[in-house]
Amino acid sequence: MPASATNSLRVAVLADSDTRWKWGALTAKRLAPEDADIRLDGFLLRGRATPTARQLQEVGVRADSLREVTGLEFLRAMKETTEKDTGEDAYDVIVLSLVGGGVQAMLHGLRRSWAGRAKRPVVVTGYVGVVYEKLADGLLLRHGADLVLANSRQDADRFRAVYEGVGADASSVTEVALPFLGGRPYAGNQDPSAEQGRRPYTVVFAVQPSVPDNLRDRTYLLNRLVQHATLHPDREVLLKLRSKPGEHTTHIEELPYQKLVQRLPGGAPANFRLVYGNMGEVLDTTDLLVTISSTAALESLHRRIPTVVLTDLGIRETLGNHHFVGSGCLASWDQLDAGYEPAPDPEWVARQGVAAGGTSRTESGGGSYATAFDAARTRVAKLVAAPELPPLAPYYTPVTAPGYLPGILARHHLGPDGAPLPGAPAADRRAGPVRQIVRRAARGAYRHGVQRVAPVIRRMGEL
Image (cartoon, rainbow, N blue to C red):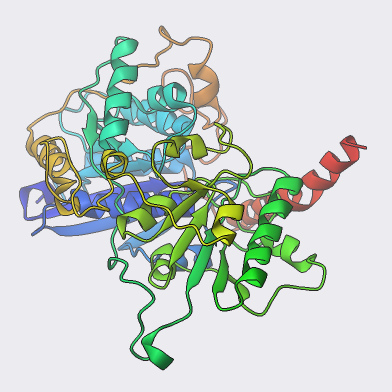
């Protein structure tokens, strides 16, 4: 009996990094009916940012099955399970948690894989966090999914405007919220188990792999963080890192802060340390969250933790902190050193799908964060129950984008019609042990080149 005919939901999530796996898996769980028995199968797209076992453990989201695949292997698996739609292997929902080009390639590949079939899985996609660059490009590459999730009311309005502006169907845009918001609200640095009932005031700087993207600015930020620790010896000052050297996240990190810390003259003060781990667990003991433009700021605001988005390097689109204009959270290290604490603007926060004031408005005009996925859940349930669904219909086709689409698809070894290109690797078979070893070695070499060789070449070019 197919999953959709029982009180269960079978979901496949295809992700290309640790943060996108977290978003995709948690989104899948929130899209399932509250009383449903969900089976979650994870597929990790093989590439430069494929998460390591440590990163997956840190994310903390468990799946019933999890394996690495190429795009072609994923398409073959989805075709095979859809052909078994009278058995328990059939998927009800597929969540594509990828960069825009990956989503577009999978949409065309799935369209071809399911050609001639009336019943198919519901396809969902969206963004892992704040959308502050390449809005039109990223959105149009995601067009064609049954649901394109917007993490806030503001994003939903912008997404619809882009689709309608090019004459594309905007009905897929569905307002939700970031699926990983939560945790206990901030109540000060109280700790009954500590001396005098309080723990040290804790400042956390949440770094980003690609922002800023140069040694000078990163060194500046690190020095200011260390200076803050020196000026406030009674505070705990933490540098929250996303990955260890050699690992990649959603974005490439050529200049890991760990290496910059090792170069600090005289070393770091005693109240300064590096931390890894799940962001939610770090926020449990955070009294001030500082960042350039990380999605961690929204997690922090949701808990009502004092949150600062730095202006030291300017308010610029390349940094992404322009997204926080009007938030009330913009400040500099000089202000923080002097004891400044921000006061977020409640109206701005509400438009971001964050419940800092206790509520978060949704498409229905009101409600709490707990109801933010209700509209999407209802739409998914209706589509899953439908006797048939139309073929996927991306905006980009060989007619609308003949000079752009073929290149996007070719990166995933697909032709303009979504079919595997002649000679494409592993188009019709699973990768054997030898090929898997070669792939791991190649990925390791790539990461070494990005973090060690590329910076050296860049410095030589500046001489």
